[in-house]
Length: 306
Image (cartoon, rainbow, N blue to C red; front, side, top):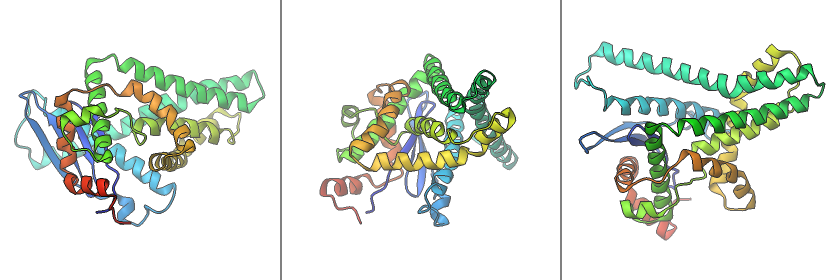
């Protein structure tokens, strides 16, 4: 068996797990039952042999993760819709796909506006009182970090978000349990840490740090050019950040620990300690995308294919 990197995402009362050839959605319904949905999926970068091209594979992975994340988040909410119908006609399915695309575009626009354009615009105003571009660029990076942390702190006060953050913790604990070679039982899962170096939260934080460095070399006092450059460089920054996150996740040394430390700290906000029922949901999601027992045997015997 080849060693694979399982990744996931917390959704409404459930967890999505993504394996090498499929992704699963496990949701705890209001009646206590765990509903599971599995979809076959293979990354575009792997199908087109782009998974070996640095930066490019990061951009593709970012877009795919965003698409699958929003799709599964919307699917999880359907289990709790008041007027849920068991049958869906072709036209409705088509409308649902279109709605997903619109939601994806709106989500991207909101994120770009709040975390990219707003801090860039505010920091750009400093150029009216100082000629030092580096001051404005550094201020922009600090503002971006502050806005992100404040945003996370505010939404974490919402009850639904609190539970989602608990499922986020269950996702991490389950992956850590699997990668440690421990049997996947709810009790074993809860023994592990809720922090993980490959988390999307760490990715976002690395993006912000990389953006500070990149934007230091992009200098203009024309506001519209300044804002446009931030948008155009998003793929480059996402690609670079992906490479940094992969390095930190695959190595255990001083450099990787330094790179991972800020993201792990922010995960104190985005993850909470789960309960046994949440761990059970996470385990079901993992079991649908990988042969757990074979994987555990390879971990314990260090016998993954090279």
